[in-house]
Image (tube, rainbow, N blue to C red; front, top):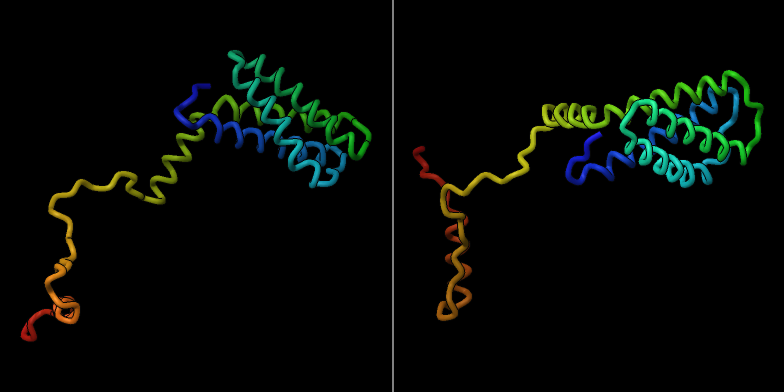
Length: 168
């Protein structure tokens, strides 16, 4: 996984959130329960951030899956600490699916981010760089201190209220 300028933190946060969400969903789908969210919301993304960050440094797919499997085990254990439930084959299967989905997301994060950015650019056209100035910018004439204030206001209002000719 290559790192672009400034994209590492956002990508890491998204992958950590995805990993934590998949761990909780896999745990619930495997027959367990998801305990109090007040504890899970700060703890799971921090743990997931650690393991997705470590897995992102692995060069091989096997290393990535191994680190993410350890991460799913730690996330499963963190969930189990709050609300113990039986761990069966369906729980193991769901955590394995969560590991594979996280590994695919991690391995294809750069291409996915580029595709998402391209899709958003097509839907939301936006100029990030202002166009170059091809004429002087309009300026507001401010009367000098020698012009009385009443006369200056009259000149300003008269210029502002001027419209097109009547015959147009």
